Image (cartoon, rainbow, N blue to C red; front, side):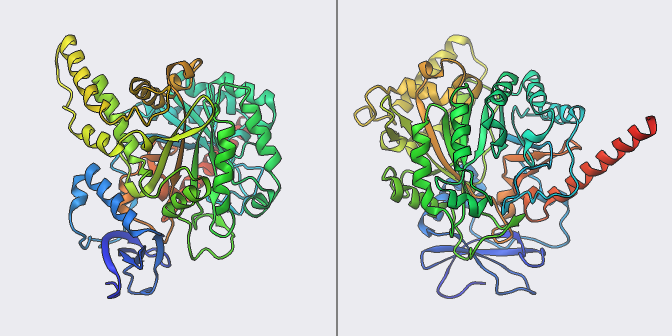
Length: 509
């Protein structure tokens, strides 16, 4: 199944990038890098680089074995007989973050648009339909209270502030928008959205050079992006910068983006780096040596001097274990699902009063912390006094992970825990006066969405970022936008709904 010079790492169910057939795929190491090759009888010679550091890839496998014990099994062939249906593309998890496309209208035509927004048929969901979809998320066995409005450009929906207000009134605890930011260049619109209850802008931000925007977005945008950040800084909303990184265009912008974010760290809470994926509309120069999460981590360290590779980087499913631990310490019943370790990597910085960043792993033993989480006792029915004693005992166990001598002077373990708790609940952690209850911090993470070269059903089934559809179902991000691309089917349904509504109104008239 693989050349003699390579080492088999895993075998997964996948799709052939050329014909879309449901096939096995081998994941193997060669010359210190990791590749994936589908076992397709009609297209036997396809393979793609998916991770540029095999040792780190194996470390992520160890994380998966910790979070998902069944993944400790040796690689073996997986059944892929028959034709896949939609059920094969569903996640076993509920969404931790639900994404809702509310319109396919957009005022940009970016060469890297995974949604492949075009100038053809357009729709905007009506407020009644959106309300039903929001309510369906709350009615799930484990309610999803984190929503990201997307599109198209969601702020082009004529009722966008009303939609945000509806989500707030229904009880969503974190409301964000994936946006190119164009409408937030108008400060009156910033105030309107803040008053409606918007918490965070997931802001398209590809670099500190207009040459980058010309290649990735087809126009000069840097001045407008800076203006948007300055406007949000006058509000109590927050920003996560979202650069799409293409190996031939803007890898060198990772450091400059971080330095810009640091200058605005009271309002920019994170950077979510997205390697350019071959989905939707993408028109870029040679992408054979694909930018991936291992490249991201090494480049960040090289360009900033702030992190060690791979010691300071951990999978974002580790964050889910943090929130699980905080829930157990509070004796909450709900637990958060975890995504696959290969989906995302991150590192976290404490930003001190002089705006200097300190990498969390330099003074906090994350590995020991996560091992301790798994030793926490399950929630038990017990009296209030017993719960308090148990909580104190558990806290003592974790304080040993915190190296006070290496930590920034003003940071204590209690303040760190309180901030992690506040970070989980954005309505508390970033509400008025948040800086008195916690500390200023910034996450740098990479989210590697799958395309036809890296499709992996195991990752898909562990997905926690899911789209909500007009029939109130949820679909993993990567099958909505890649593989079978259920986005096309869903948007066809929405256009039909638009036409039926228009016909009904015409009849009434």
